[in-house]
Amino acid sequence: MRNLSEKTLVQKLDKILKKEFGTNLAFHEFSAGYGIADLVFAPDFSFRKNDIKRTPLTDFNCLNLLISLEKGEIYSLDQIRDFSPSLDIQNLKKNLNLLVNNQYMKKISANSYVKIGEKDELNQIKKIIAIEVKLSDHKGGLVQARRYQYFADESYLAILKEAKKNIDFREFNKYNIGLILFDTATNTIEIKSPKRRNQNNEDNVSIFAKQMMLSRFLSFSS
Image (cartoon, rainbow, N blue to C red; front, side, top):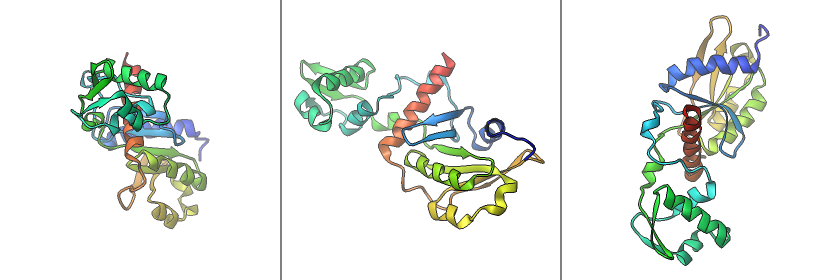
């Protein structure tokens, strides 16, 4: 393994996979509430500050509330409370103020609101790829990579190619996890993509992850 550390492997994969996936940014140590992925990419997407018109929503409850509402329909405060029964009135009003201030909703009277944005506007990023990086621990890596399926469209384990001989590929096929094999001799990769579309990702969690990615990008570029 030539004394290669996981941190160094992450850095090498960052450069290679940005080109492979057609994006200008990789997110390191990324969490959307289901473990911390070593690398996350938005394939075929170029991050540009001017393209982000609204402040990303990084409060999960606030985002869930917005997703639950229909564009153009007027809601009373009591009706909105039904969509967020776990929130007390103070936190509900706090979320509504955040949505209004960032032009996701409009307040039309003392206790009535209307949603003015489309759900698709929260989906600027069309696809998420999450990667767990290990040197040789394919079993632990598989467990971690499975967690990322709750928010990612594709989930991979990246591992040194020399560890390939110990891997049971049937396990990865069973759980629909892809593999990225890194060759230390040539600094190249071999990608074994997942066999089918991920059915485990949850729509609201995926949108939340995309909003988190946009928010982190803005913090990088400010």
